Image (cartoon, one colour):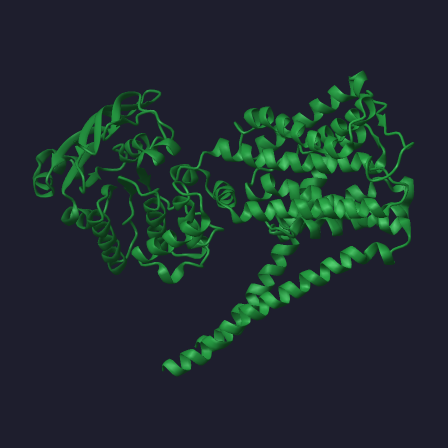
Length: 236
Length: 344
């Protein structure tokens, strides 16, 4: 069974069609890159999957659960973790406390959550920063912190919104390693990304959106040679 | 190399233990002073000031749960205070119910009132939420001002015929001091328990980034309502104690927006979201209030309000983290300065 099935999802804001009849699927332990020019509707689709917007039409299934129209907190319970374009870390909480908030969902015991948070911070190479307030960390650190926080939910699917944008080469390498480790741990990742040279080598598949419509879906090498995709990025 | 790192690490290991010992000693000393104060303070005017400080602190600490930790600025807490005061008083006067039980019923009644308040007001955010809560107090004030059974605008007197612990009425101020101290301790205890439990983490997450909190499975409405429920219960206990101490309540004393603002101000001045902040804020604020009252008497009734206003503006402009936040910051900076040469 597919892990995620997006079936003919459309999202309209008044007269603006942000997503138009988008369908695709994701399997277990898969990294799927969601790319497209600015304003193609990538973040809107994310918000539909994570419960922030109810789709105007279509359905979203996580394994055998229909999650379309669920609230964000219900989606989190169902197994969808997410990060945001701007990291949205809890600025006044320490790194460890940030991750604990995620870990407390399934087990309300603070001590267990603290333990889990330490493991996850080490996992994203932030073990040495656990007592720092999130507000005082660099953007690169905050992005990794947001990933650790979402992982604390033990999600089946992790949605990452531009986790690699604005990173320097060594930070980028670090981020890519983390994503690969997450997949190796059995979690599928749907990644919105503009940094194509980072996402192309690690993705199993690439889905391309343009003006709200899906224009390509396939292996990275096929997608990057697709004439529609080239036209969308470079213009006719 | 390992030897040098050990020598550097050593004082670091010793200092937390020393800090804990200092803190325990400080708490014990503080508790002793608080317990023995009435033995030394014989002047009933001064003792009354101490009671007022304790009661204001208890309000601020209760308010802090929703306003400080969860970051939802309520300017309607007088509603819960009033409901607590009226419930225990009406039960006592009309049904002879013991005020100890009346107090708990009052707390429960306020918690019940908090449910529809939360249901309607939590649809709004930030300033709009605060404004809606002001409306709640005004509505309840109008209801009680016109409700004959609750004494209308004249208010209710508690009879002084019987005195003692069973009816929570005393001619001496000393028992009220201990009652206020006990209630404050209880409220601080609940506050501490919450801040150490998952609720504390959830409340702070909601305050910092509500959208991100939702992505981690934290239901905003559920936990905001929980915070308001606990906060309103504790606030109402304070209201009942107020009624027992003053032996007279009316809508103009327990159901005013000015009282709501005072609860918020006590916490904001001292430091929102900290355990001890509201206690510090209450000490400063109540002292100013009472001193201006003594200096200017009835003619200077607005003076404390002017000073309130100045305080709000200065805290907002110069130090949003409040007095306690300012001290914590100073300590942090001092520590950073001390540790820097060691690390280099």
